[in-house]
Length: 168
Image (tube, rainbow, N blue to C red; front, side, top):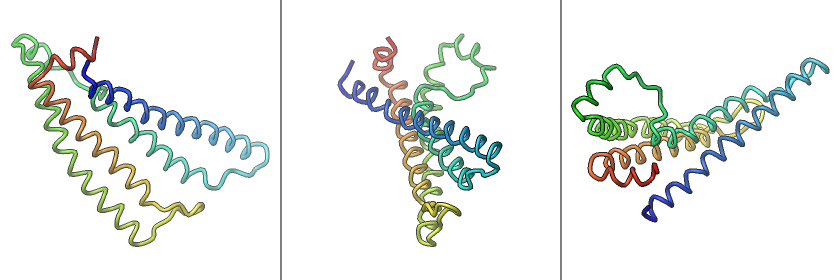
């Protein structure tokens, strides 16, 4: 396995750790909120905004991993046809490249919205957390997803044996 692929594989653990931490914080916060609400009639007031932020972190931190590993929901109505004509690799490569290219539009739009939130000084209601940090995080992870899908698609099209090494 090439050193670059080893580096990419080891770097892919960081987003998973971030998602696990966000999920753990969400579980603890939800448990504490339910207990405080039920027993003491005093809910955590900032729970809603923390849930929104942590859900964004949870979803978008694993987006690059899901994208590269083809973990998205897929309908396999045409898989038999593509397999019969041995076009599955071509289809997967072209779709990865196409999706990687079109993901740059949301990267641009979310970046603009994050910058607008920064310029306006938008903050969350209870904790006054600047909203643009979440926008920047989403922009970064979607950009990484786009680049990863482009690279994955190009590897599928031009050097599929590299991915065969990784999957062993």
